[in-house]
Image (cartoon, rainbow, N blue to C red; front, side, top):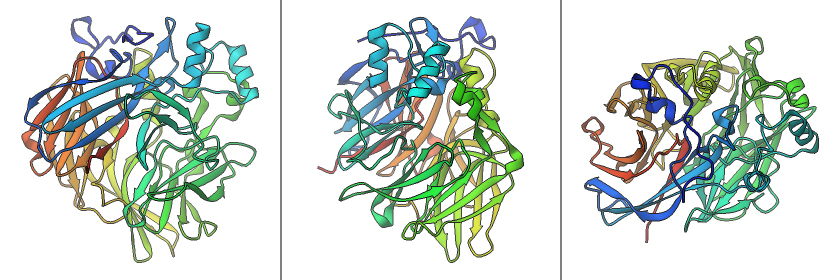
Length: 467
């Protein structure tokens, strides 16, 4: 089935021959087609021991009815699922049929987000109505599959065909928001996450999703200001938030005016607030402020005596957000190449944070191997050079990397059974690159090809088949 609303990619004057480069297409061009599981072509040889499903999630539709959304982060989400077993692969691609999207398609017009007419936006704001785009991450918890976004509840997906089952509050536990970046702590056999509740005094709600048993809210922190909070990290003892001075522009939000980018303001004079929440004593929050910086994503963290050690990708400011928006508008340049891998140490007694840059290489979307979450790791995996290379980085900042061919881009490698899996985007196609994690510079040992365009996928998970 062809995607319901395919947009022409935004023009990009830097492309040769008048064709937009892949790094522009992945942020602007809709999913090529939707389909259930079908056989995929394998180039090379898939490892026999690799069995399971790779789930990826990101934007799938950048506008409707001939009108482009105001920012790629407003796009309707889409999932990719690639099943690997016995040296073969099948794959499915679906745009999430969320309640808001179904309503818009029935009405034949955009009714949500900042691309809707202003009176509609204002009415939505005052009535508390919005569209859950489910466009950022996808997780598997207790055999169930959920697509996540920044400002909505989990959207459950049927793993049999990626059809949309609908929003869930996980048994009455989750409030209006459940972050797109849960983190697992291996030693606690649980996922942890947060959700913001904006208001006169913005609240940070903390959640635990155990491997066995019901989800639960474990605590709430009063923030006192309305942040844009994208990610956090967890050790086996603490949940750690580095809350940058990116603030929601409340007057614009209340009046539903301006662009998506204008909803957020960078205010470095406020500094970055460090929040350290003991998991077993969530009311005993340690908080202090340090110099202003920004981060999209964390790799991992662990507890060391009276310190918390945190690996993350650091930016000087919030400029990368606006750079991404400019790509979606047909101009600008990608700015994810400005992030650098850092190791921070929080001294809990002294209430200080020190941060050291480990490498000069630009990188993003860091991950660690399953089992390393929340404890000290030997290697982290990431994409390097503005999404142009796949590699690993150690605690001394040494990088091993495979540079992708010109015209390809990739995000977030995931470790599975000794291999790295990454969805790589090429023109009018995509493939899952399967790398021997011990020989990354040699390139992929296999490529699982998807025969249509796939927009950028931000995050995902590999669900092993142990049966």
